[in-house]
Length: 150
Image 1 (cartoon, helix red, strand yellow):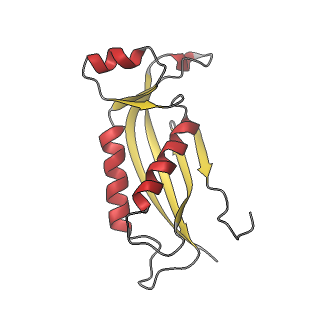
Image 2 (cartoon, one colour):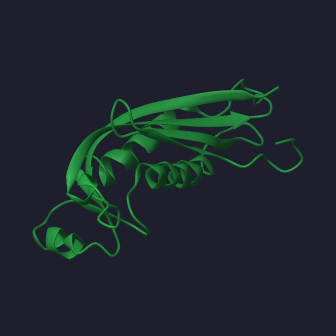
């Protein structure tokens, strides 16, 4: 048996993927939704997976500070220095800001946040689902923890 909690948050962010063919080579924005799930094999003694309020607050703060009403651009994107020079809010990603890469990014951010919070033993970020439109989304899923069946 395992226990799960999920935090949902939305944000408005522009991006572009100029290395791919099609209309997404253009800078464009989306109303993104992220669902971040934390899983624990057992509840803590106080009956929780993670201290929900703190996790939600810190995760939402990171998203709002770094992504909301800004642009995600790849490190090699020619627009990156131009937008920065004009004072635009830009979050630089290592590869390209696809919806798949955004799900993975948020998984790592949530994992870093989780390490400093009150949580059940063995709690980990197990799943991140991100949608960039009502019909397009991607899911990142953690590998099975050591000692469990996949």
